[in-house]
Structures are given as structure tokens and as C-alpha cells.
Image (cartoon, rainbow, N blue to C red):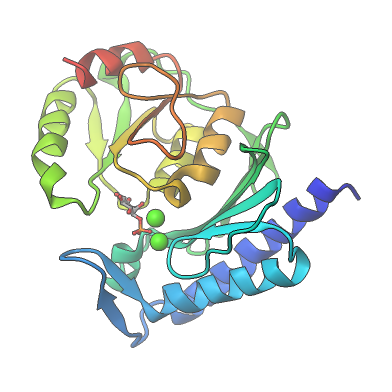
Length: 258
Ligand code: IPD
Ligand code: CA
Ligand code: CA
């Protein structure tokens, strides 16, 4: 087994195990705290991250880790794990069934694998660079719709309340041209839904690397296109993300930059 295959297999195991843990605590009486006015963290986020980071440290003690809550570990390494123990914490805390665990690995600055698991639907989305994207064992592809008017889109609003006005302006502008726009509360799963053709496009401002690291690779390996709002190259460390099936990309750029 190559080093990368071993890492991929551990990432998949971790996503499945953590997903089971999230499901076992879902709807129970867990502690919820505020990180900001509307930004929550639950004791389940913290425990799930501890489980993931603990296993990575045990199996790959020389790898760097960037995790959302508390588990980051910095060192000189070609490998960096990027972990969101629960993407969709607000949904999770409210008993709304749309959340996941997201794990990605960067090698020398490039994302080489990503896994995202939704324990409610038992859907494991995964991708390795150059090897396609999968939903469980099925290869997935972005949709073939070319008209914005026929498209189901999705967006998200970050916790930065200053940005609400800008988010609403974009939402109002785009909803007039699409079939419908959803706002479902888990950027990682939103990207997976673009990758498997349920959504035709997704955009959001001010996401964090752990929200999008795995999802962006899954979209691109499924044949999708990812850029900033103006069409230039995006990175997981940037401020904007537009992910589509490629066919409606130019029309969305026009609306996002109007
Ligand atoms: C959030 C979700 C949400 C997005 C927020 C993210 P969290 O992540 O991805 O969809 O709109 O910007 O912060 O806090 O649930 O891990
Ligand atoms: Ca997140
Ligand atoms: Ca999170």
C-alpha cells in the first residue's frame, strides 16, 4: 500500500467512525456554547475533533493538522490534514438533519484527497486527485444543465453579520434568474451536492479552509469548476468560492460581479 493509499484509508475510516459518533449523540442533551453572536460550538464538535486528531497524531505523528476547534498541530511536514469535525453545527445543535464530517489532506500545498460523510443518509463522498469523485462506491459527476433558469443553486451566509447585506444582495439578484436557491447550512455537503449533480452551482463568501478543503477537490474531480466570483483561480484559504457544473459558470459570474 502506498503512503497516500494508507492516508486515504485512515481518512475514510475516521469519517465513518466520527459520523457514527455524531449520529449517536444527535438529538441528545449535549452542551452548546457560543463562539460569537450566532456562531455555535457543541461538546460533540470538540469530542469529535479530539477523536480525529488523536488518531491522526497516533498514525502520522509527523503530519501537520489544521482543525477548526482546538486540535491544530503545526510542524514542518509535506502533509497537512484539514479537519471540520461537524460542518453544519447550527443544524446539528437544532436537530436539523443536514451536517457532516469533512477531512482533507494537502500534500506540498495541494489538496490530494478529501472525504465527507453524512451519517444521516449514510453517504460517503470522496475523491483522490486525478482519480475521480465517488458517492459510496459510485463514481459521480456534476450535472449537465446549461441554463441558469433550469438550475437549482445553493449558497450560505457566514457568521460575519457585517456581510449579511452583501449576501442578501447576491441572493436577491441570483434568485430572479435561477429555478430555485437553497441555503442549507453545510458548505461541505453543499459542495458534494454540486459534485453529484443535485445542485448545479454554489457560492459563498468568507468560508474557512476546513469548510471547503475536501469539498472543492470532490467537485473538481467530479468535473466541476471552482473560481472566485470574478472567474479567477480560488484557493481554500481565500474569501470567495463559486463552484458549478462549468456550464452555468459564466452566467453566475456575471450576476456575482454585476
Ligand atoms: C459553517 C457551514 C455553513 C456556512 C458557514 C460555515 P460550521 O460551518 O459550512 O454552511 O454557511 O459559513 O462556517 O460552523 O457549521 O462548521
Ligand atoms: Ca464548517
Ligand atoms: Ca465545524
